[in-house]
Structure formats: C-alpha cells, structure tokens
Length: 379
Image (cartoon, rainbow, N blue to C red; front, side, top):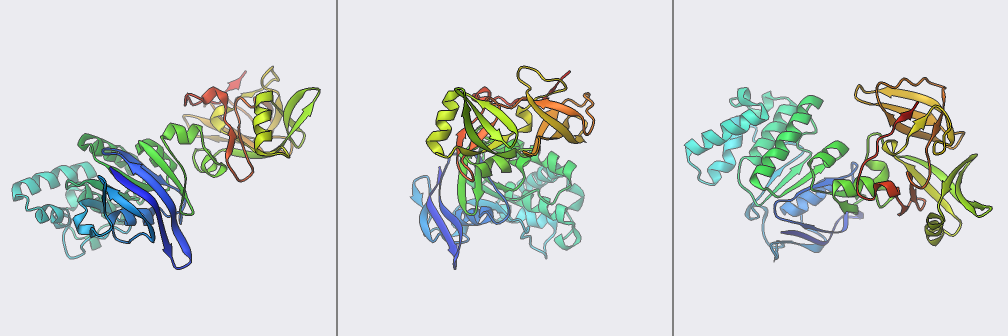
C-alpha cells in the first residue's frame, strides 16, 4: 500500500502540493485529475522520489521512502515530455529496462513484440525518437514504462498527444493491461473522460489541494464543492445565483424572476450553512428535463438559446429569464428550435445547492444511489 501523509511541496513561495494525504491500495487504479498548474505532475514526482517533500512523508507497505532513491523504489514512470533515449531505436528504448533486469533476449523479443502490437508501433521499432511524431514518441514512452514489472506505475498524461480515435483505443488498452496484471497505478490527466473511464478512485486536485477523493460515481454525483462540480462533466454543470425565500409557509429559491421550489428540510439545511440564504445552484444537463408545455413538474419557463447535435445526443442550452443559462441532454430524434419557449423541471430534487464558492449543502435526492439521470423532452 502506498501512503502520502500530509505531503507538502514548496518551490520558493509557491505551494505546489498542499498537505495532501492519500492511501493507495494494491492493485488500485488512482487518477489524479485537475487543471493545469494544480500540482498533478509534482505529486507524481514526489512519489517517484525525483523531488522530496518539504513536509510530510511517503510510505510504501508501511516503510518510509524518505531515504530511498528513485532507482530503488521499483516504480515505473511515464513523463509527459517522453524522456526517451535519443541515440537508441524504439526497440532499444523499450528493451532498456528489461536488460537492466537481466532478462533473456528471447523474453525481451517476445515482450516488445506484444507491447508494440498493443501500442500499434510495430513498424517503428527500428526508428529513433527524433524521427517520430509526438504521439508516436508518447506511445513508445508508455510502452517502455509498462513493459516491465513494477510495484507502482506512474503515468503522467501518457496519451494526451494522441488523436481522438487512438486516444480512445489506448485508454481501453491501458485499463485492460493494468487490470490483467493487477497493477497499482497513479495516472495524471486533465481529461474528464479519461479520469472517469479509467479510475477506481479519483483525486480532484486544485492549487495543490485535494478537493475531493472518491469513486467516479461519488465525485460525479456528489461533488463536495462548486469547483469539483464545475470541473467534472460534459457538458459542465450550469450555475445560477439564488436566495432562499419563504411565502405563506412555502420555501423557494429566487433567481431573478424565477422561483425554484424547495422542501422545508432543504430550507433548514441551507439556513444552517448560510444565514442570509444566498446560495449557488448547480444544474447538471443529465438531471433536467424539458417540456414543450407546462406540466406539474416542468414549471420554469425558458427560451432555447442554442442546440448542439452530437449524433447520439443533443445538448439544449436554455436562457432562464435573465437568471442565466441551463443545459439539458435530449434524445437526438427530438427536434427543438432556437428561440422556442420550453419549460424546465427545476426543484431541490434535481439541483445541487452550494455555499457560494464553497462546500455542498444538498444534492438531488433522486441520485443518492449514484444513478445518473437522462434529460429528456416531454412531447
């Protein structure tokens, strides 16, 4: 088991990693996910021993790695900038870690052949890195890291330079290879789909701090802060400013001229966090339905602002009477026109409520078991 215990790393006045604590189980695929400059690569380098923490300790199987140099940690790392040996061929680059383990030539040939076929680089084995594209070099670096047995694999944006089709293919291959080996993996990415598709658990990192650690379902359906909610999702969550009001014993969130009904228990939770009742309302496109006519649940009027077609789904963006834009996912066979008036289903049952710039207050009750909704149009 790999443990990060209150790890901090400073570069002069910049705090790259801030008191991060993390336990990685054997065989777990952990993804570190966040924007550029969040501290993702720095965390990987700390684990590898390339740089040392300013404070805190890293342990493997209960033993401190403080005085263990990188070459003795039995960790295999893919660097974002490839770090290939320029004077060696692709074959020799991939063979290097195997020869260091004194593996037989026959076994080396076999492993490189299998890895090259998986990575689709069989025809590149006799080339040198200087004659490869960025995507090709990235696959060679990935192959060199995965071809040998290691206690932990550290993968820093290993497929970011590939085209979309190949990236999708390699994502599946990486997950399959690591799953077959029972490998322990720490994988860095800024791509939401990669994080969700690959991980057993996700660490959402921002400005060196772990904002949330959880399974893909937990992080997606129960984001603990507005930052996490806004950073995960395609499309990203829509946010509106609201204030809790009460009239004739009924509670609602007022957003300009729009009123979103809330239950008394939800109102109590809001007032326990923010006395002035001012909140941020997060709305996922998959959790909102649209109706062409006003119904018992679809009560919020909106004007269609734009319709984006993706073949397997459409994303409809609506303008809610000055309050802001809200998106919904609809079936591709439903035709909606720009400027058409529609009605949205918005209540405390399908919106996330946050302290402004802060923590979550409530989440949609319909998704407490991690079940994703699908926006739809009621004809």
